[in-house]
Length: 187
Ligand SMILES: [Zn+2]
Image 1 (tube, rainbow, N blue to C red):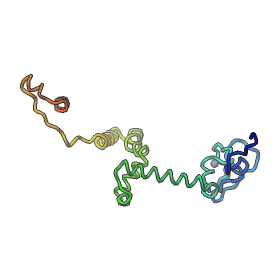
Image 2 (cartoon, rainbow, N blue to C red):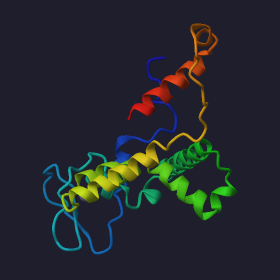
Image 3 (cartoon, rainbow, N blue to C red):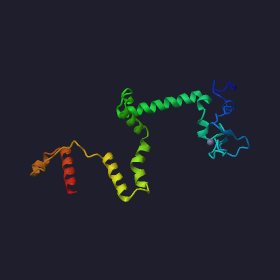
Image 4 (cartoon, rainbow, N blue to C red):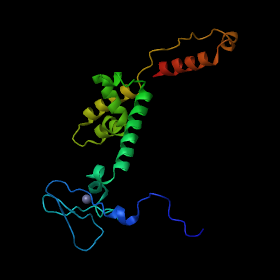
């Protein structure tokens, strides 16, 4: 048959565009001609300057407000995605859901979930902060290095062999460890 209906139950363009996002408190809705910008007039009377999406006429940020009411299915998917993200972060840290309730583990989980922000705060922010003195910046850089590259506490101590036969008897791991010791002792 050539007259098959579109796959069952999918919402049409018209039914989607009728769902306007809810407005933040005190905001109003610009109903002039479309100028490509978000239609939300904020509580202070200025228009939101962000680019509107075609679907809602508001920017993505303002489209998200009231999104739960406008599209429960999508909101529930977002909720599931957030749950997956958290359980993945817990798995990476080896924290069970029960232990994640303790303050320290919850803080570690938060740091893992905001890994990019955390890295920026630890490394980029102090290095780029114009208000820090050279010495303060150096202090922060050293602190960051100590956090990022903690000195290894488990070290294989290898004696330098006295002859060629002794060198041949070294395992690969022992040779690497010896090389690291010798390089380290030159500093
Ligand atoms: Zn907006």
